[in-house]
Image 1 (cartoon, helix red, strand yellow):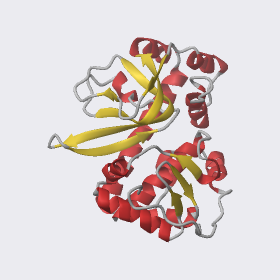
Image 2 (cartoon, rainbow, N blue to C red; image 1 turned 45 degrees about the vertical axis):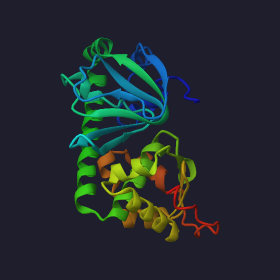
Image 3 (spheres, rainbow, N blue to C red; image 1 turned 30 degrees about the horizontal axis):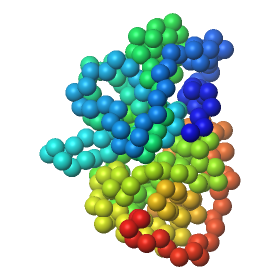
Image 4 (tube, rainbow, N blue to C red; image 1 turned 180 degrees about the horizontal axis):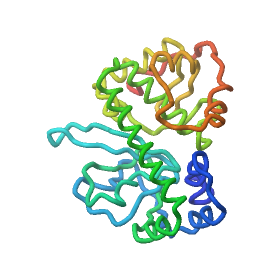
Length: 267
């Protein structure tokens, strides 16, 4: 995977919401990272683990999840390149959820000790990462609303809208198209529906001409209609006005694809 400088997307994300000094940017660039490649479904953390490091996503995706009755999984968030997936672990004594890879991923581990020294040395960075933790909490709250009050098709559309903007913000969803290595089960577990229901929802989104969706790639065909269906507002993501305008103004509605629908076993 081409990921550029290890901290480039993290820095990009931080600078969207914070005025970082040159010294602070250098501190981020010099963080002692251990970079590894992991395979699909690799378990980064399990409930009860006592963390000593944070996990920065460089390439690919992670998801957090919890098990209900020891068997049924609920995905509670996705993490994209540039995210620190366990920022809370700096202050929490142990994990209360699991953290795993969706498809192959490139990760960087940052020791808590080194990270804490950087934050202690820079009030600006301490504020920036505190803001990051608050935005992650806002995403969790939005997922609670999504699962609790929206119909299945709106749940799926909302997750797609969120991922589109978060990936655009780190230049990974140009032209409203992005790769996402999730399975039908992953989608179902993120939206609190059955595999069969997830299949039907994706087929309906295709039929409506809102998306092109195959096993690994999603292209938004009608952003404004998808937003309406999802009852989606990006306020909780806290994008600055200039960036937010750039994310959405280039998207135009296009007619539904005339290609034949993918077979049901893909989605």
